[in-house]
Length: 181
Image 1 (cartoon, rainbow, N blue to C red):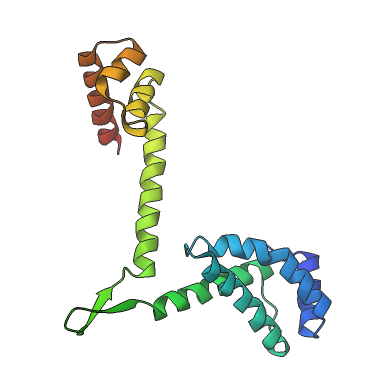
Image 2 (cartoon, one colour):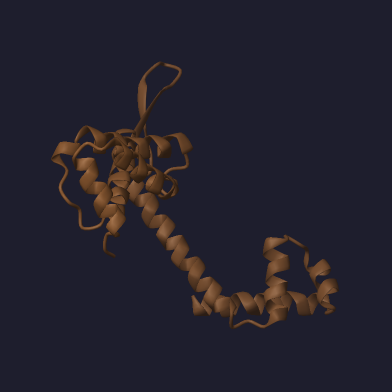
């Protein structure tokens, strides 16, 4: 992806100290950066702080800015770095027990959380792909059982099959999905 002419122009004007260009860049990317930041933190205020820090640093160091290959990518990377830096500084949470002795609770590192989320996304993607091979009746049975938490008797009634057939249907679906995953 290359810079748009507008991004390049705004960047050059910011380097010269043009406040209007700075405001235009903020208006263009603040929402995008906030949405991006929320992927790394559940705290909206933390995400907003990270985005605002990006623009404060741009303004503060405008005289020393180099020309990035891609303005949007540059802003995203700086936002990510700000959030990771804040998370790393809070890696350990300290509490006190009844004896007022300090104990450290190890939080899962941010990188580990990201890896786990990626694994879950990959597994969900594989599951969705594998479910496409199931019949509509099989997908409905699984949906009612696991999404709606319905008992076998109710699912059997909805699908107009016996309870034993319903159990067998769901068992075979799960067996097939496990095999594909």
